[in-house]
Amino acid sequence: MTRVGLLGYGIAGRVFHAPLISSTEGMDLVAIVTANPERQAQARAAYPDAKIVTADELFEMDLDLIVVGTPNRTHVEYARKAIDKGVAVVVDKPFAPTSTEAEELVASAQAKGVPLTVFQNRRWDSDFLTVRKIIGQLGDIRRFESRYERWVPEIWDNWREFGSPEEAGGLLYDLGAHLVDQALQLFGPVKHVYAELDLRRPGVQVDDDVFVALTHENGVRSHLWANAHAAHHGPRFRVLGSEGAFVISGMDEQEDALDAGRRPTDPNWGYETRTGQLGILGDTVEVPVELGAYETFYAELQAGRIPVDPVGSVHALEVIEAAFTSARENRVVEL
Image (cartoon, rainbow, N blue to C red):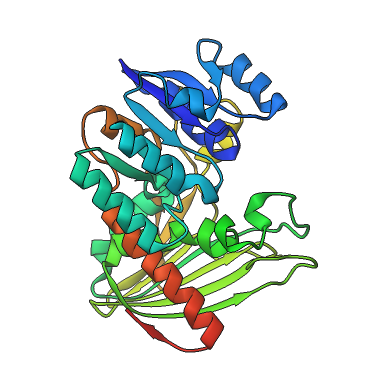
């Protein structure tokens, strides 16, 4: 069995990591770190065989894998401790507050032979898997549009809404980490970045309205949106090619399913009734979404493979940093 220790039991730990780890054959969730008494009670109820420990205690345990699902400001610190201990480590997105710190972690892990990966779970969203499957039917891709839009008019009392740079808060770091990663997965490295970042809601300290335009080295343009106050949601994906288009709306349902207590071992896991439209103007056909498959991440790790190359996450952070520069200086940034 792979003995796993989980740092953090907020949304990342409770909704994603703990359920996926405990559902993976061969993995044993043996320790959970959370200082919050309410979350400690939740963790004990959900995983009675796991010890509730402090971070210092976890790093003294005999573990095979450490998962960092804590606030962004602690990602580098805990990942470095795991690498120094010689234990394989999963770091939640965003990998680090800066690309320089992320690059240092990659170099350290490589030098010490420690497996390191980043939890980019939305590579296994149902709609993204569908785009990957059908994109070859669209001819030369001209433009890729991708959105994560929400209606959250009141700000949260949460570190993701805090303005200190070390928090790496705001939507560009949060949802943008997924949007940029998916665009890079489809179309490769980026050479130009343009961005518009705004603070819309009363009292907000960080970006909550994001638009990023990427020009990939292969000429494809990606337009990416993240918004916390969108009273109307655009399509999740719109892909325009020389021979047709693909459009799909709505959101992958795996997060809600996990939060509601469902697991990848349940019947019909990942199944949705959503469909996308493939074709030209009104001449389209319905395309059923692929099965969502978040469980693939830990299954790959358990099989001895790295599910997400951290080097790609370093480039994604370089894109995010360029987006901040672009918005601040109102110019296109060349990478």
